[in-house]
Every structure is written in structure tokens, then in C-alpha cells.
Image (tube, rainbow, N blue to C red; front, side, top):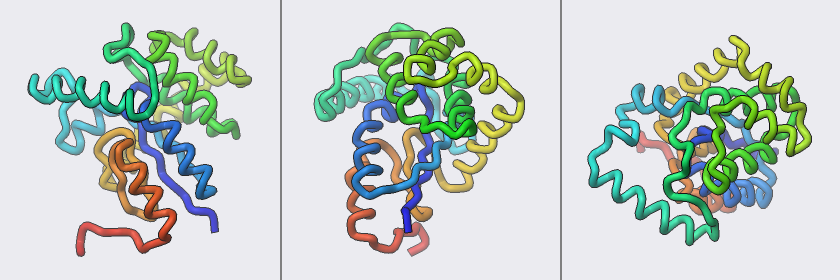
Length: 207
């Protein structure tokens, strides 16, 4: 039976970007199905006791910059630590992922382009026209999908993803949930791979 992974993330998350290629390799290696669940991070942080970056202590903000550089090298990437259009309102970009899935398309090509657009090319993904161009560039009907992404029922699905995230003990981005076991952060991808390889029973917090 094909294993399923619930993938909670936001297009504006640097850590989702950094880990995305490695995550997709694990998905391919173990023939997993991915349930893409974009979430509004500010709302998720508020629900689970986290803080948006600007409100974190300067010590934590400085350490984040170190980690970005370390993982940039570790994953063999080349990107801007402080891209010109970040942070940005990721609502439409995240909801576009939902619209892509709803239309029966694989969102992975779009996500790869979108992550690169933010962190490597310094493009503004709060701009609907930028999203149309990115979607068009990977063979999707960009304008129609961006228009669909702004619909109220897509917005409701986006909010529902947040509620599902909280119910699943998810509190950041990216998070990969396998059989109810939460793997938080792109630095847990190797542990996710280990769990898939061993086919062990999921760990639970109520041991």
C-alpha cells in the first residue's frame, strides 16, 4: 500500500524551500503520495505559541541567519539570505497551490519554481501577475488558476489546513506527517526517510 505524507508548509518558508528537493527525493525513493497542505504561518504560530520572526529575540534572529547559511551549503543551494521581497503576504501563493491540486495537477513543478523565485531570483510572489507567469512557465493555465485561488471556498480550505495542522500537532513549516508522526523541519527529512525504510510503527508522545 502506498504510504501517504501530509506536507504542511508555506511558499514563503525558507526552510520549506531548502528542504523541498530532498523531501521530493524521499517521496520518489519510497513511492509516497503527498497531501499538500499550505498553511498561513502567522495564524499557525498564533495558535501554537510561536512568534513571527520580527517578534523573536534578536539572539534567535541572528542564529537563524547562521542556520540559513549552513543549510544553504549543506543542500548545495545558492540563494539570498535576505531576499528583496520577503517577508510577503503568501496567502494567494499558498492558495494557488490548493487550486493547482484541485484542478488535478501535480503542484511540485510550480513549487520548485516558486521557491526559487522568492529566494534565488528575488521576485515578488505577492503580485498576482508574478504567480501567473510562474504557473504559465511550468505549463499550467496561470491566469485561470490564480483567479480560482482567490475564491472564497479556496480560502476556506486554506483556513481548514491551519485547523488540521493544529489538530495534528503541527506548529511550523515545513512539517511532514507520516502515519500521525510529526517530523518538524527540513533537518528531519533523513529521519523521515529512516521511518519509511524501516517501516517501523509510528512514535507517539504518550509513550
